[in-house]
Amino acid sequence: MKHQLAKRMVLFSVLGTMVAMAFMIVAVLFPNPLVLVLAMSVGQGIAILSLALYLLAVALDLQSSGGAYVSAVDELQAAPETPPDSTAGPQA
Picture 1 (cartoon, helix red, strand yellow):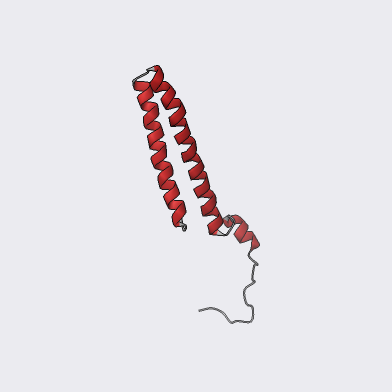
Picture 2 (tube, one colour):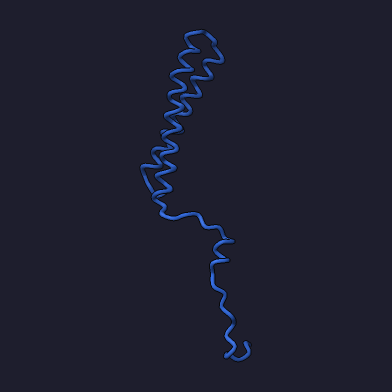
């Protein structure tokens, strides 16, 4: 990634996802009603924020790359074929 902000956003996305997963794990291990509500509301909010950060970082990285994906097959088809030079003598 070229953009430093995109790297930082991915880092915060990973950390947020880990925190959200910790909320979910605690809710599974200790299934109290309050813990379940906390995990499903706060944990889901953090997970959605993490997903939004990741998607924004991907969009920012694609924007800064400045080019579209070109497959090798398309590149070969677009290249003009040059015939060998017939005026040159035999190659040794």
